Image (cartoon, rainbow, N blue to C red):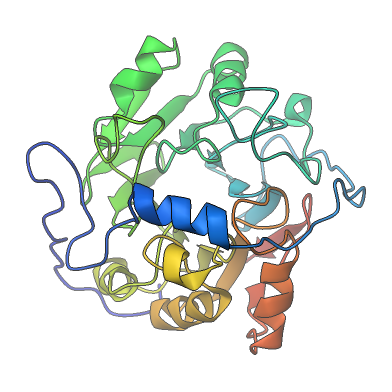
Length: 318
């Protein structure tokens, strides 16, 4: 593995009642939400873009490589000979508590739900509707014998929805499977599904560690010192999944979402062998259009090893 490792203790992030971003700006409150909605004008995106070629993944990858297939948004299928892991799965038509209103899908998933292989773990980074999609998780719990890994204080919610088994982790905690370990690592974000539960459950990223490699799933996060901390603790990842979308306007989104420029900076600070852009291209959740993040990433000098995949495309890493 690349990079040196050292003992790193992640900072305190819970005050006894609610979680918070240590030594960093917090998510905007209601007044700024209203200011954003009243004064900002979002870019227009096509209602639906029919450019996705769905693929059928192998049931189990052979050899010693790693295959990463972008399904959509922050949903990635990671395949190693020891595991099939799915990140923040969403197959719903909207990211919303309702089926009839809320941000709608602009592209279909790159893998049909029925084509998923047997999963060993499902990683859920936080409770926002575009990352914790209950209809999808219920389907997975019904169709699969898998374990759901969630950040602190989120297990109870899943179990009340008959979704399980669940393994709950705080920053710095780990859970070992046969042949790999999942580590819960910091992110700068927030949590909420309603008006009264803001920051009562944790948000996180995950590091997947095997004998051969380190994989980092950043999930939703602002830019911050945690990228350097993660590299120092685990070494440079062979693969990083880094968010690039829902970044505009910056005055509102910068405490919780990276811009494409910041994603490139994170990629370099991690020393990632390969990074894949996530959190773009399927749902429009901010003022930037669905294809603006990937175009912006290229315009500001995307490194060749920072890859932008279409839904259904894969990257193989030796």
